[in-house]
Length: 124
Image (cartoon, rainbow, N blue to C red; front, side, top):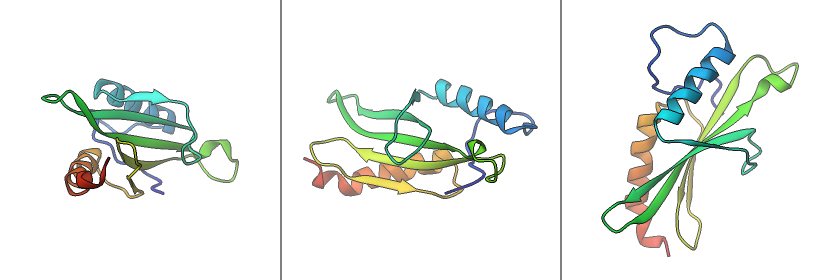
């Protein structure tokens, strides 16, 4: 899991603390249409999700998720936050893409679109 998640938010200088970074990321995700959820899909502390729609057919296509792992709760783990990127196809069956890498969110969003286009024939 990535230890220094890279999300393209508009900050002019790097934050001094993890709390400042987290505050900036939270504000950016909220403005980008993501909603925070307290969940435990993959043992994360919380997640932000956004649904991608086909507006023409008024149909949900897939959801993009960022699963946050706050390692600060463990005394020996250091002062860091980890993020796992998730793409979940929306249908009766479940087809997911999970990425744990230091990538830009915009690159992951493109990856999700490509994943959806290649896998949509399998979604019921």
